[in-house]
Length: 583
Image 1 (cartoon, helix red, strand yellow):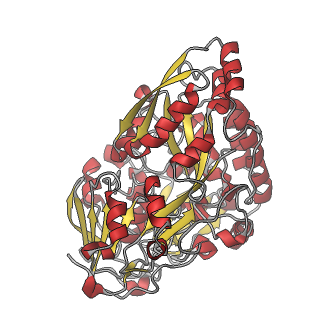
Image 2 (cartoon, one colour):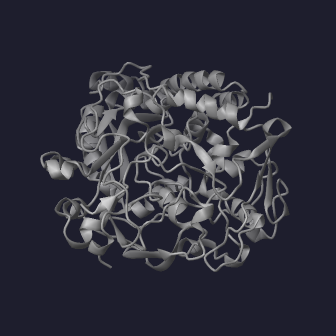
Image 3 (cartoon, one colour):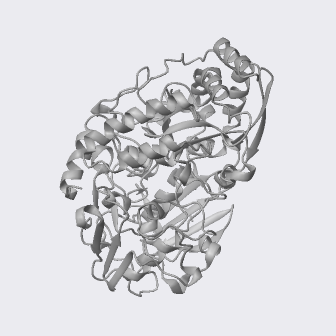
């Protein structure tokens, strides 16, 4: 491989960004171009702007939520907004993204490390050096061995749900089962307390971006609690956990051993952050619309419900408190390819025609909040242009679906669909549209906090499920392999490939593209693979969403970050007047 410097990589990624790309594939500045065909600009605050001005230090920030965190353990944290929350508030990583709206937020900067990594051996080896004086919440120094330990933890079978990059990239990790076995990875070296060196299976030009993930944050071995570490991660960030009552409330207070002079990204404006969980229905939205008492100093997690959109857009004073950035993600209807009826390609092809995507747009809040998807790769990874290889109407084609099902001998199809409780309306819309093609659907729901684990249990996975995928940085390498490479499938804690799609030709092509040294060549190859996969129909791309988020009247510094799928960047959010906050 021709050695590519980080600067060259950054320049290539930046060039892609100018075509409408959002870092980590999550979002972008809408004014840079790349609006998907037929989409509507977001209402509320202008895209890429900050709501409420600059915060003042102090006070209590309240986060109103209808759910608990899936995971806060950095070895297991890989869903938004859990990952954003953990990275910005509780733990630091080797490298991170700037805390800025729009394209600027797509740039990476050193975090715990002194730089964004030093490649050698043609990109097969990467070295990082830790900054001086970085400490945990108890004042003890953060050591390179602690980052190595957390990387190793990501291999543990019991610590499911986290990013798979370490397992994919590190040499000698094929049969490794984590440090609790007493074994350690030789491919991660820590020659001293400040140096960590990664030896990879193959050249990875984008490894600096990989090092932004929570896998590359420190966990001291002395704090190991296995699956219970979820309840009390040991802080290397600006806040630490004071109390955590699962499903009810999480309280963060300042980590007085965090040194802001060595962390230019996190501003840590509030003195305290209180996450109120378990709120029902549209209660979160209604409280933020009213913005009374402590709710004036509140934000929501994860996002506004579709039925609340009309309440917000009709009130100008509330509308100006709405943030709605594009996510850069694709929502998909996953079909369980591992068993009948979706082990039959003809049945899967029929599903492509059976789904009425317009009804999904309506169920999610209308064209101001989302757009129908016509490919797996979102516009954020296709230069901003809509890809539509199959040319299926957005309303679907029930007649064509029936024809394909008849040819497959499956005219009387009965299947189950599992959705998160918050997506029941979307599930019902799917049920109605599939019925037009003669497909009977039974809907089951799962609590959002366990939804990923439910559909990620491969032996007990449903016939159909609704979920999405967001690239971790602007590259097809962080998208299609996770969705459709059969080698990524796990028995439990399966992430991404919920379709359980196994296809040797696809896996071989993924390896070929990953080996390409020219990023433009690789980008074109990912586009072609996307088209090939659409014809194999392992899943149905459904929506390209915006992330509608509402804030209280006393909130400042709020914006949808391009890396965090349009969620708030907790590094900069705070209050206009801390004296008005409560708690």
